[in-house]
Length: 290
Image 1 (tube, rainbow, N blue to C red):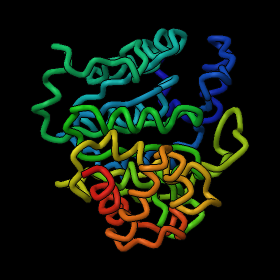
Image 2: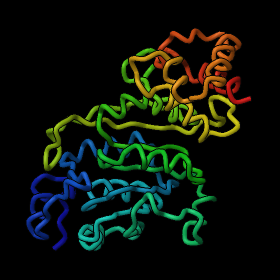
Image 3: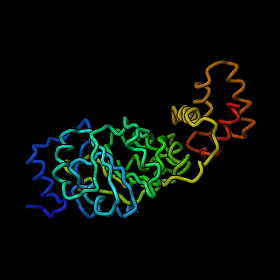
Image 4: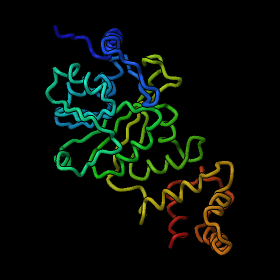
């Protein structure tokens, strides 16, 4: 008999865990969200509708996937854990618009023929409950891919979401903030308490929404070189940008040139990196690398 309770219903989640003898793998950062209203709200803020094709990362037993399938045209769910791939065949059997891939999202070849249709999708979005330990690599991998998605809606550790949305001059502002802001607009939609997960994590989570900008915030010749430059500037937060970059450009001649380049950029070398906007970083980078 079909069970009409949401997969994310706490009792149903526990029953599924017992039925399949699921032991959560800490190494994969696995936690089940057991509050249907939060999952429904997450789908709502992601603006998924009947025209949407959704890429979901880490569906687990299908709690979020179920809500996505009820709204979207199609859901492509990528699950690294074979145990859950087998379970999803049962829990998601009522939905014919879901395709599950047993793949590591970081190793997916988006240029493969089976994914070529994604380039023409009217509304491509990414929605995921991300493992805490690998949140940043997954997001950066998606941003750097050639996928034409409009937005990413990610449930993640609150602290990481705060870094991705941080304002210049705040404690949370760092090289990750700049990497995200380069081509995305970021905002925290709502906070998710740790009490609604099984097992309960140590910290609260947040739903972060990243919207792709029509054009990058600054013009850069090589984004990878620029990001390495910004990361170098944040090597030691308590040091000035001068001290961090002086160690990055190690030779004596480079240090002399660097002093002149700060003067040309009209940026005080005694400032700390968290006080520089992405526009100031881009300006300094262009002068140093010209």
